[in-house]
Length: 133
View (cartoon, rainbow, N blue to C red):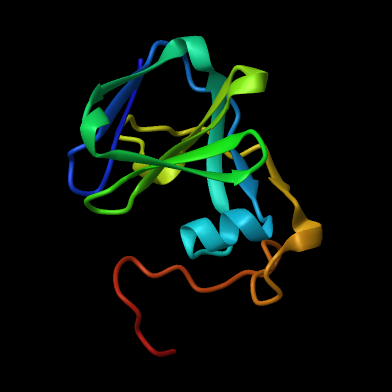
């Protein structure tokens, strides 16, 4: 069982499945939607997914043909993307409450990636906030 929720806790979901692969997507649409270098997702079958709270505050945006991004209208957290034609739900890893320990499988759409982020480049790992070197 996988569980997730938005930042404010209004929207919650469950998925009756084991964790699947984790993918980091670097396409421009994901970067803009998440205001980040990439979006981390876990694809699952749509039959395994259900909203358990907050459907009344959930909004959708069709970011590309056939792909809806679902987000909380209160806090703005993007929880999933749906591809109805593919019977697929993409869980947004940042909103998962279930602890996932597996390593990501791939970085995709590197051809569209932000020039300021390179997953091959090692950067400092800090336990908390930023500290100048």
